[in-house]
Length: 358
Image: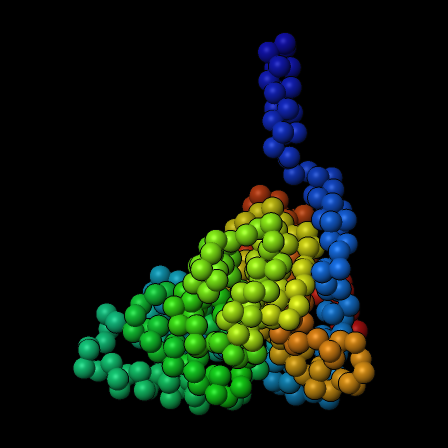
């Protein structure tokens, strides 16, 4: 009996020490984060979500709520492009496309019939050197047929780092820019862009969503220094200015967002569960809200406060906030077993809680 009591006391001590995640602990951390977020930098995320989310209207037709395309998916990585594309649909986009390699296409199609999958990308192992120019031209021509229909591209989820594949995506980025299509760049897309900053430099409709390691590479490449967490806001501002006109969403405990002119923070408490794939949800979410923000601003009166805010900033704030709220809701239900698919299933309810459809 004494031995079992001692074991119980040690277990309770460990739980307290490690910050065990009971429902009360989760609620407490949400409250602490809310208190910490009361700064001038903190975005009014819920009101932004309400402002830019379009009403459901029976007079609208298919496509008006958003047409999103994900460029990514190869032999090794099929989950990431699916997560990004299906998240866009779960939030409310009408159509979601995936442009991927042939090896990845049938797998991604099997995940959901809701996605439009284009098996057009190629990797080096399947293309002879002498055929690369013609194959690259065919890939670009196929994407170009669709380009002007899209409200936003998400480039990078599950892309991989095959040299020929990245060369093709480099050309796709150039054509998207020429067509004035917004671009959200994540994952291996950031690997490509960090080595070729000219692809996005000076393009105000480009959004970069780096994690801690991707951000470190960008800072070292552009600012030639180490990451400074003590002056994170100013460094992010300098980085966005240094690249030129782009918007950066730095993922972290609080997401920091800057277009080189302003810095905003989203500190809504999400989840302590860090399962892979949450960045893919974020990229798909930002793509939808960016397209909705542009629609809203094009129809808004010029004197409305929100009309003064860069649509890329609005899209990042809304995407970050919704992702965090969905992660929190999923964690309340699933705790340690929370997976990315659980978070995706909470996107709709999380948005509904803020701006009801009816």
